[in-house]
Length: 152
Length: 152
DNA sequence: AAAATATATATTGTGCACAATTAAATTTGA
DNA sequence: TCAAATTTAATTGTGCACAATATATATTTT
Image (cartoon, rainbow over all chains, first blue to last red; front, side, top):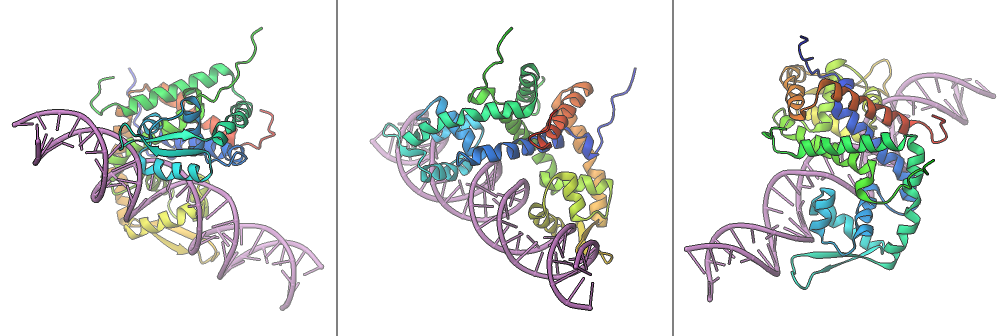
């Protein structure tokens, strides 16, 4: 019976740092592709959500991306300035702000379609490895989102 | 013979978003633990490096963490203000700034030791799963760091 | 040695993240 | 019914990330 290995403070042994470093490298790899579309990486994520379903509120966008209004409000204002979307209060509930794509925002969908293809090529992973890693990361995030006392 | 699946623009299918979301969740999980030590997450990473090897230059720290002086200089100044480290020009090369832990900075090492233990418990992963995921993320980062035309 | 080049850090500016607060609209309930 | 509680965005403030530039020092070239 072997004792559980003691977790260390060595940088190279940390899962958190591998995750942090990989995430920043991923964003850096997207950067030149998205720059060609006039988007930052978080802006691209917002557009992905809106291309799936237009007219969401700030709250719904935030729920999807796990971002709050402190991040989204200025980001959405920049996308509005760029002419990709519009923001207006819902008449049914004046607290809510509905985000709607402009024609330019909708048109960008077509040009964006090559981004995932380009990244897939860049990753050099099999479809299975891709899906396995993605789903492991999803379940890690789920595990970390659970309250501290959650029993599995 | 099945054709390769076409990559989509659906948010939930993106590896990048799973990575981005998991990384932010991870940082959020560290936050209360590190707050007790008076550190932010990037500051904690800098301390991990210095606890392994003191007296590194800003450049060497940056190489280890993949961060540039635009990020590190103000961060290191805040850690200096907090009394955890000192910054001084190397006499051998006045361009370089050596970062040295103060006694308080060294003392924090002991209290920090429980952070990885606490996180390991929080993750609910076997040691093998932990290592496998960590190393997959490392190799992903390596793959993304390679120049675009790299053949495997 | 002077000029050109390279290197290390700092500075500036933009854009996230996220906590905390504010303000307005809506819902709830005594 | 109307005061309290809740909900939604926006605002404010701090701290990263990162590109671009500036500045000082060191090295190389001529």
